[in-house]
Image (cartoon, rainbow, N blue to C red):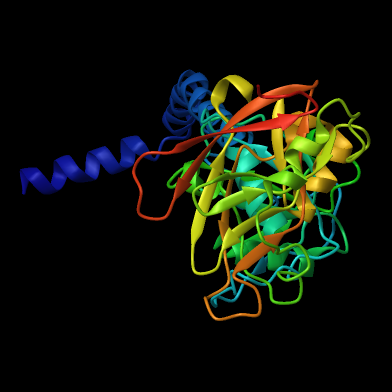
Length: 344
């Protein structure tokens, strides 16, 4: 009975208007005291969201979920499938820029050379603003999504996204597709930067002939540079005055790799690929290849040797000693090549 009376007294006391008003004032005061803490939490959450938008981790899907200033086209998932490594026209007419978004030197150039191998028109090659990217991304300007999808297939990237204004400013106005190279492209970097000239029956016979020292040919192992001695005391008349047209031949059934020594890189370069030739004409000697692998046709053809058209660029007349490594050999041969100057 006492418990019942006590409960009844509390209910009557709590029902008094002045007591209810007092309790409301106390609740409001407590809420006001808690408000700064709540605002602080919300501000921290908002700051975290903002930083995520700016830093964005890898940002590998640039433009995904974010309005792209240069495109209203949505992102696209790229279907898989093998790419024919010998398809030189897959990227024909596609103007591409490559931004290195890692700290690995030469990554953008190596990726660009792979794209050039498939016919891409390589434009800007430079560093990007993010140096910690893990996964490579492919982004595109308005109207070039399909071209970006082809670039993505070559690189094994499964998604393409619209290009952002910041990236567009770095890549330049003449690139329709931009590759943001990440750490996943650094594996096998050295082999990726080695260009390969393979047997093409349509052209192999044009420059293939027997080695003839009387005609100025120089040879090392199965490889010969035709007419190199004929450049002595002559001006550089090829590649806009940067070098000489010097076809190379390799004995059928053989492979040979030619390397420009490190001390000559930027001063001497190999031009045996149309993509490299375009780059040299635009950017100069430093854009030439430093390593080139020549794969001859199988034995049994009309000529015992396979020819490869092209030439060598040099900053001045010199005797350039190139390194020639044949298939299966660990040591390279030293091959002195006259480039406007006698090798003695």
